[in-house]
Length: 256
Image (tube, rainbow, N blue to C red):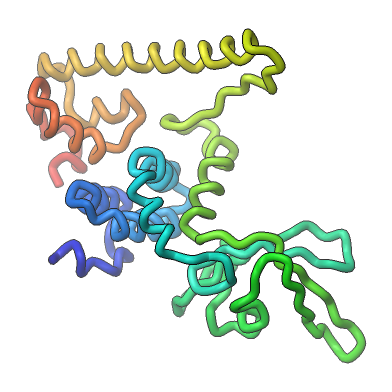
């Protein structure tokens, strides 16, 4: 019941929000976890871990999220949709707008309020629809709706595509360029590259687990070495009988 009542995260740190979201995931409250991690990403947009946690929810619990998104029809512009709009008459780049029903919006994210006059022009419209905006007595511009997405899916696509550009030194997510394979051999070579990197990472984690098991490091150190959030590591360790929680006094986050 406590988890169900959580709505406001403004007074919580990113780590606390991630911890609460982890509890929601473990108890099957995926919609609540999605909401909390989206709001955390929005509030802590300049922190790489806010994006990693959000991306991780989709990659790990995607099948459960699909069931949520199936209930949300996004074939028309409405609350919690992301809308891609282009100017018809001019060669101007397209722009995304996020339809929000909240008092304080962030224009830097492309958010527009549900009660905004511009929103009222596009609400209920579908892909391909056009509409006019009167700039003054002589200038009227025509716009076209190019794409409509659920805002949660849009945020995921944005984070995963822009992560390396936003956080070039951050661990946890990176792209591997294998080009456009024209032959089976080239494709297999690219896949092999990915498998080799994955195997290297797996071996590194296993060595770190051995050190931890021998009480040679704290949970905080463990998390930093593998580039993961401390609460993620804590959650995994509690479910691995051969490891468990054996050291929990290294840093302030662990003491919380």
